[in-house]
Length: 163
Image (cartoon, rainbow, N blue to C red; front, top):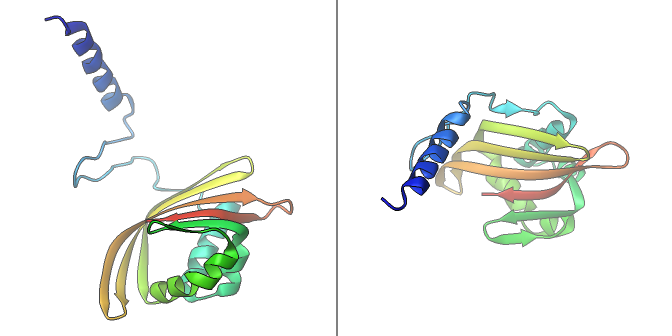
């Protein structure tokens, strides 16, 4: 067999990847991703508290806290569209997002906040259930937020990606 060294190399690489990190189980199809480490990391950090404040403000309709959480130049990616500033978001989708979330029960499934210097990245998966405009909602939501530490030491969300 001419390609035997390549086959052996690829087989070894696959075995190394699949057994080299005992903390992960790879997901395929409808299988779930099992993680041995905690699925909630860094959520009590200063940046994590801003994320929690933002989520709570959206769900309770607190526009003041939403504005405090977001940087003026925030970019929000959702549904194939982008809003390029806090003013843009406030004049377009902020009130719709608050109305949508108002009567939903949001159950966090996973949330990690990783801080490197003056940048924090928050990734989260949640289960949303409830009713909106007479329609039943039962969905898994995914979110990535990027936060930047400000000169005064506070954290502001500069990027949001919802799916």
